[in-house]
Image 1 (cartoon, rainbow, N blue to C red):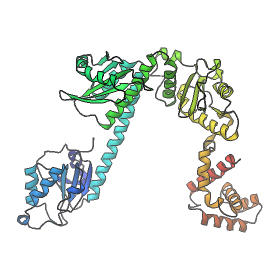
Image 2: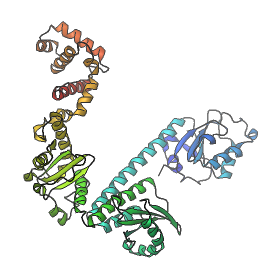
Image 3: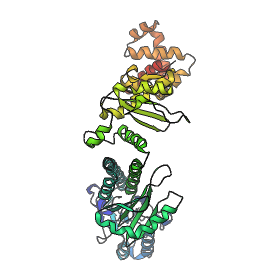
Image 4: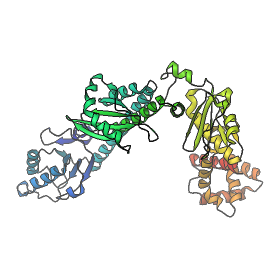
Length: 491
């Protein structure tokens, strides 16, 4: 929720003072608008804290006949409050404005002369950014809890969603029968939703529905993947769902859809692929979240990960050696996870003909980094035209991470002024020697086989061509990494 007027008033460094009664201090401030117009409302959306110094207002309180009209327009527009800066055009807030704001119920705040309007705006921006960050953090933690609950079935997902939202949740089957209620008392609401569930069952579109009943807002969503409806989810709250709450409901819809697909005939392999995606994303902690049944169904550690390009129209990839492996195909990638002894990389290369990238064997906790290793190895296999590259074959360290097509593009962009120069090869060689010698002229000149004055001339030319400061250690490190990346990625 955005910051409130009360939160701003409680910020000591702003020195704000409320001139009206303490009402409306819980109003959210969505932005700060500074305006000296007598009617700023055409430029407002509502929810703003309007700041003004009253430069267009008469200096005599008794000569100000427009205070009520001004305040009335702001109230009608739905602003959060009005801040009046004193010490610029007026030594104090005009009394008629105070009376008009009090009468209309609009919070009126005095902004002291030492407090610039910019400081108020920056504080609101800071509070908005903090709220957004906290909201994202809460949403991520809640989605993780939902993912963990999904390991135990559809009912636990509904229970967790209810706990996170403070709502009631109903889970219906594809035929409209109630399968789970959270809490149990929420089952009494199912008959009232039977008609809406029936309407969605008969619809050809996979759209949800919003229902209002007895002061509650109810979101009804179909569940399933691939155009198949496996059930319906109903979530009821006493308020309209916010952005973070809707995101959480959507996550629950996805997880429940996968769970219902898992229990449907012939869908086990698809769910195993969904589990693989969750493991690679780090959404499942096998040390804490997994049940004994889940661990038994997974390949034993150490495990090995391999990725290949999914060929369009090739159909399912399978081989007896892949029995017991987890396989997923999405986003143009075919991913296989199996025990290290099964060598998924070698099997996948034999089945597909390559290119294939294989990560180093390890535990489940290292799978997110193993995915990056396998992707980097796949890039190398595709670049070198070989069927299989293992991560152990690639150079390690930061330079190894940079030696990718993306890293090569960044390196060429950084060194573009030198590459485009007619003596680019000489300039690149001189820069490489200069950086390798840590700026020692004689050492670098000897390595190049040129006179140190020649080297000084070239380095001066390099300084003119490059946009950065060659004396900046960070910039020198970037240049050195770029040079080494070009060395490793050039054919």
